[in-house]
Length: 174
Image (cartoon, rainbow, N blue to C red; front, side, top):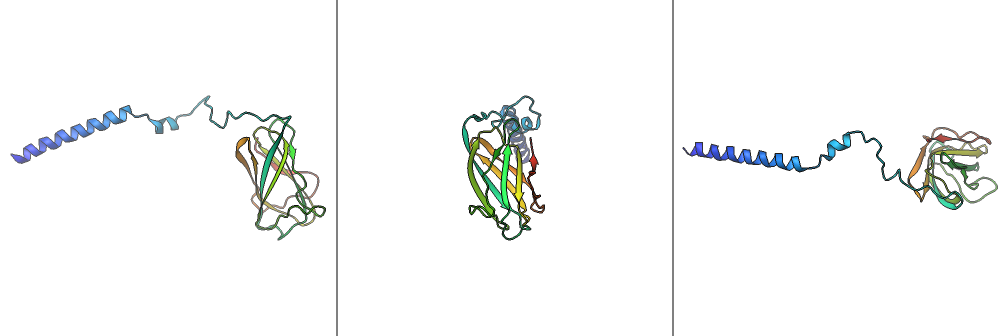
């Protein structure tokens, strides 16, 4: 007799718990399912960033990681140019070389350069200009623009020697 009574109580409790679970999940917002659906004509917070005023000067930071297969020290003259899809590119000042003593790009080291230039929208292309005989190699370059986040990362892999000359070598992610 007691076993039948316990079975009835267990069935009632199971029904109550199952009903409660159904009620809770029917009231919950299905966020996991919503993320899996394609979001057409939706804007993320990154898409609504305001473009910078091209008549002003903006501040940039370049984080440059020299490849570990690069020479231990280089006197090659390195210059960067980067831009967005619409405006004139921004050129960095000469960052090193025989006629400057400002920066060195040593093997496996990260160098940070800060400079200013014309304002851009989201940076999506970068060119590296190298003059010299050392054969400097770059692993990656991050261009940080304080008005357009996130920063843009240009990955070169650290195994390719940047060509010497007046023609820039780079990536276009636009």
